[in-house]
Image 1 (tube, rainbow, N blue to C red):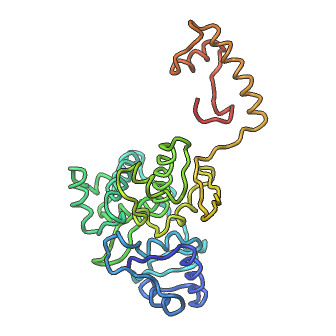
Image 2: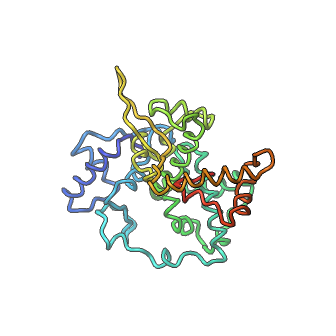
Image 3: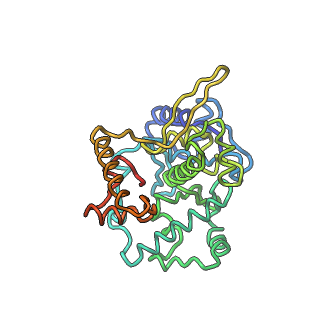
Length: 313
């Protein structure tokens, strides 16, 4: 079912359930067990991706647990161990080189298609017609070296998660893919701001101005903004608590690494080189897009901005 719950509350309670149930719980009975031990889950009646997130998807984001399908086809939640996290031989080998490029294109297409659907969730039986409608071409499973669509999608666990079972099988974006997508969208939002920063409370407004649509946090596979912010990779954004007279907020900004002492010294040397280069140029100026080749020609070496602790010229 689609539910609304905070990730830290869910993670803590799922671990408690696994301890009390001997380390394994059938997925089908999880809601019953959860509601018996804790405050009942806020289960959404509408299954349209606009009011909540599938519980099975949220479980993928809980660290230290794994959802496995047994020999009988019954899904169980278990504590993650080296045994049940075993890497398949196919994961190590990867696709044949001739198909690798096509599979990369296919994964991008799936992300593009799913992110246009509320909740990024699509019924499995609708995948082929939706793909055809979205891209104007057939999805030929054999082109990627498979005979069944399910096998093809299961070979992309870093991008796709298959949830549910039987007639209620759905395809959604995996949690890792959602974090990558959210991180890219957040960086776009930050780079559109004059100071490359904004307050967390203004997130929905900045999102709407950047992407011309209202924010639905369920589209990123979480119920609360803080749940996905906490999963953003290190050295991507910088957050700082801001306290005002009546309320507290969080300032989000693009991560800036401080220059090391060595990089500061190199930058001073670079400043002198720029002056020398400009003195030898007509009108004491250089077109910005010709700076790198001019630097290379004048000093006989590449201009590497990374040497000065920067990413862009």
